[in-house]
Image: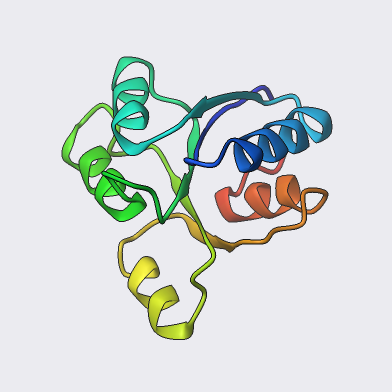
Length: 125
């Protein structure tokens, strides 16, 4: 099934690795945003099927971006997966308390990433 996913990360290398990983292994269309404000704007204009969102970004971090998406009826139902280098149990619980679709750790395995996203979102068949 053709899906569209928005990758939000302030690091260009991460955006590119994720984009290539997903486009090579799936038929998904991958859009990218460099920060939270851009992500909110893109999602509001044309909501994607899911968002892969970096936690630590300047200006508007991932949890703040997620909160903004939850405030808008047009983007509230878009599943969000957080991508973070902070994977201590207490931090993981805090992110899971946000009711995101999932949390993935950096560094991640680009080959396993499409499968991990598919599993978290229940995108089988």
